[in-house]
Image (cartoon, rainbow, N blue to C red; front, side):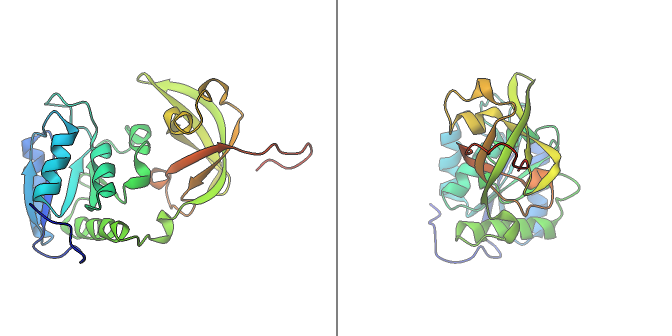
Length: 237
């Protein structure tokens, strides 16, 4: 069994590669090897996320995982959840996907514990994989880059819609960009504030958001609370 050790991730360390498509796993494994690590392919993943996480913890020092894992196997979890829970266990993990934009709302549910999101093809070269795993290893040790640090700020809900059966809130974070709408799962809010789902449009919340993120897909949200009432006549925030 691989033991958690007090040292940075290094050359030759075992990195689990999880994908539902064996051919894609092999391609990623080749890049991981070029990055200086020893890939351990887990393709296809087991039906249970608990079994998968146990194998990762047993055999690997780090993880790179595809997001959509149910394409060719019967699993009920996404790679984003695997990556987030792996990072909770202090096993550095990053997410790789072809569907970064299409699945933005589902990935966002776990984004606070996903140090890096790699777009397959565009951001999946050996150097980028090495940098991403090194960043994840830093976060496992409590070292966060400026764009990954969250601050308490206002989040305003503009509207709510359904996307493939999932309720998605369109929100604005004035401290990040007052002119851009970002989609987040309603579950992110209602998990923190039960019974809030039916009164969202127009509601202002306080939440932790990494407001120095450069792009919308890097944003994460956690720990929602209703914002204090704004006195009449005050400018919107």
